Image (cartoon, rainbow over all chains, first blue to last red; front, side):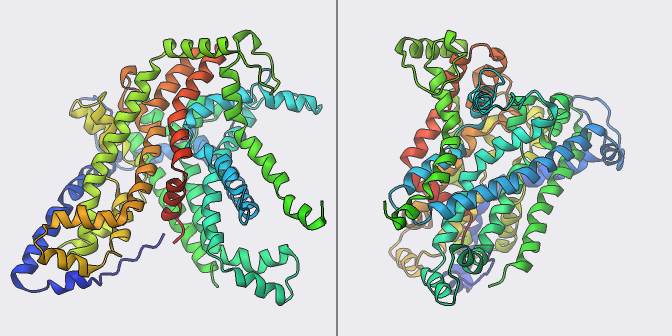
Length: 307
Length: 275
């Protein structure tokens, strides 16, 4: 994303004196007023409230509320459920990033340059992105069923024992990561396709003349370095999306056998147990992690991406 | 086949395999929704067309839960959100792109900062606020947190900036009001961005589960994902035919929307990312 915050504006600059300038200023303010009010009501005030809740023992509907300082954060640091949810989420993200980015890149490299079949593959890979995940998770539950589903039937046909995708506690997070990968790969493919079409064709020709004979050589010398910014963006969006995993947990496990993720644990504390103060502290931790994910990765990649 | 043609066809092998896996759940969903219940143990992928079973499964799904109601709620919520988002984002983006006013840089900075804040971080205080105002369990509660799209403001601002200033000046001299310039001239030059954003917004809110789960517990107000959750919890995995029929009906609008507007989808995603 290009976040150019420059201020040079010919049209605005010409209106820079006296009454017309004041009129333009009034107009500008009137035009942003609705959005600014909503920004205040939906972002700024809630964030302030969140900070205030997080240092109290406020519970929705409670009569008395005390200031408790950093008690909620100390409690989080020792809360086995929260720590397990955090661990599960990081494990999930670690599985979805290579799967989702790798599959998206691989598919884009193979689809790029196809003429007649490109449309078909775009539809096939992108359909999971648009389909309602809650409904599709219900379908996956059935597809992966130990005795009724086609996946275990195929595994059995190959002589492999039935896999308890959704009954073996050790497989719950990997199974959800599989569904997460299935859902995001097409999105990433479209981003990679856009990145690929921005690479000039003659660069490949030049690399070929310079001795990069095999397709793999040309990929490593031309395509991969030039895709750097795209890869960075795709990795960041994938990690943030994966970090917010919620639907599959809500449909498939409801957190059983210790399979809750961060957002699901947060949902339970805030909206099932109404432990508002504690949930606010967890939300702040969640927010900081999401911001770090985008910032840290951007900085990390910025140093590496040169061409 | 000559070697070069063979090499040209080779990528179809991995692509076709992965595409088949991608489509497997959709195929299985439609297949199961068309099978009579006693064939549930049939794990073959071959279709056994049975028009009677199709009608029965879909009828059972529609009587088990108010599917039509879920679809209607989804449409109301998505269109309501989109309408307010466009009405508030377009003037703000126009002002940011073409007008000079005090606090402009601050506002732009806040918009960019807000882009990084996920909705889930705001849900708790918004829930407490709506509960305090006794507004939970309403269409308003389902829509209100999304009335402002900072993404739309940012996207439209980028797009509006390229509109020629000379035309705006000329229109002002011709007596066009600023509102007319914004909506009738500048926005008209950015219709692809508007279409891409509309598709983006509708899909995101049609499929969202987190906020509806918090904001409403009345089944009459459930959006499609929440309705699907009610349905699968109530069914607890006994009537797969009806469950898959319900899943197919609730997924169909966005899938059809994608098939009809594939170009806008792809453009929308590309606009968010690579630039």
